[in-house]
Length: 99
Image (cartoon, one colour):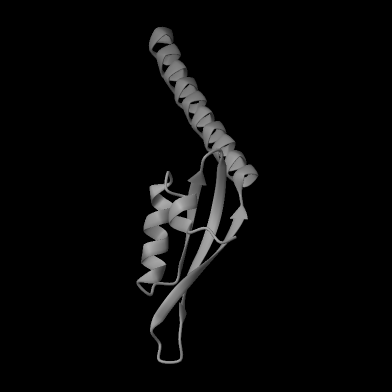
């Protein structure tokens, strides 16, 4: 409270860039790694009655657990693909030896 987002996240360039983008008038969401935490952030500009951007708001949701599970799933898919490829090569090699 009472601190600028530019001070709090000065070591997280993606948050700074996203904040500037919201201050330029864009509404969007992004997934950002903040130190050891992965957060999904929704950004939106705050406009006055004339439509002029006077600030921005961001809402964050910690998705670290989901991101880790997704990474584990992708790794398992890679290992499964390598296993299938190795089995195919072994099968073809065995067919060459049999002939």
